[in-house]
Length: 176
Image (cartoon, rainbow, N blue to C red; front, side):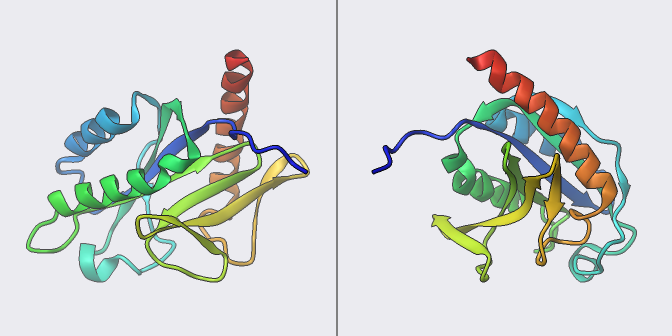
């Protein structure tokens, strides 16, 4: 018989897609107020992996990632996703989002994204939110799965997440 225990805390991040930076500083400030200080913010880069957001948000979209310093419980993911949804709503113009904020977390063994859409590989966790198993750590690197979004399966994002994992691993050791 296994004995239930608490899993190690995880490191949260957010992907932010937008057309014009506009009030991105306010978005960052709101995220920091909820998730703690920023450890890393990537430069914005063109987001051209899909046209999914163009109808609502326009074309020539950019994306940056924010990694938060504070380690948190995995079970915070539904509340974090609901908070980012509210932030998207509050920054909408004429019912159209100006920011798409996708939160997730990295753990030693996987990268999980939060979503409101169920699917075969997404596990319902609470409050209308599903956990999307996006990447798994095996053979010394995060690796994609058949359903992984192509951008998350790219060499650049996997390299970034592997670097973040090393920092996270060190912070876990420091907790001990």
